[in-house]
Image 1 (tube, rainbow, N blue to C red):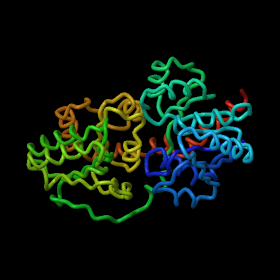
Image 2 (image 1 turned 135 degrees about the vertical axis):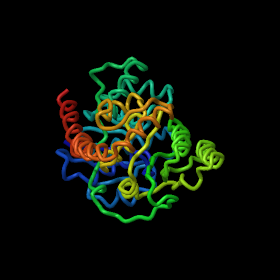
Image 3 (image 1 turned 45 degrees about the vertical axis):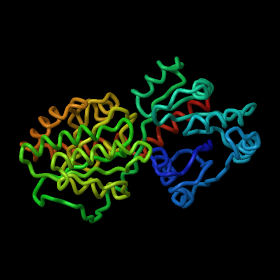
Image 4 (image 1 turned 60 degrees about the vertical axis):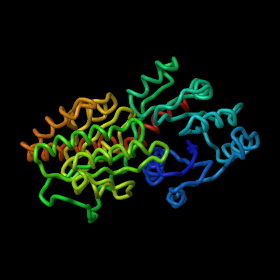
Length: 361
């Protein structure tokens, strides 16, 4: 059985990071696969460094008929049984290119796509759709009136080997003996860094020494999200304790150098940052967003607080400070469980099961 993974660009993002981990762990997969992408990106060299074949095939414009013929020829030449798209545009291309062949087409929905007529069309034409959480899957089924038997949940997988390295890093700090915390996530729609900022003000009012690290890039298309947080910290005298680190490629090392992880969202479909933080054996505080509750087993693997409620977060966090040793011990147990549940090996096993089931149809 041979799979073709279809990607748009190779820029740095959650989807691309997941696929890169899949390609780096090809020896653990029970199936063969190649990659086909339309555009280059920051991760191109990383993808091309793996042993699996990676090919660039680009349309000259959105509906380039010659591109479809080239894609069809390539898939047949490589003896592909399943084309697995990561964007609905690639699923559409593949479905047209594979017309009249026995090649099946799958798409993974990594987030909540904007509603448009192309998505409405292709989501019912693919042979199967994958979703990264049950929460996300149920929303799509209801929204587009999908047949449940043609939908499946395939949790993302994480290669935890990168978290086993002991890297030394220097982080700015205002308090040598204060509690150190972090949040990982770009300043984009759906992230609630503002809630965390309000929590930090309350924590400061309690005269608790701390350093907090926001790890994530400013989005130029909506720069006000980042700017609002910076201005809030300036206005409330938090500039020395709150550090905006921007985009970083040493997140595992940062997480290993903090005492707790705080996260706030109103949009996530999975929550890789939360899983990575739990895997680093530190106490994690997350809001009770439905998909986050699913990921952390309804509060067994992380402390839940009410969404957009900084006062509830403060109350939960003060309990942690009063019982830090107990929380730290629980964090070690939680790390073992989360690594088992969301390993790249589990992801590859689930993919193989779904591919085999589809091939039998």
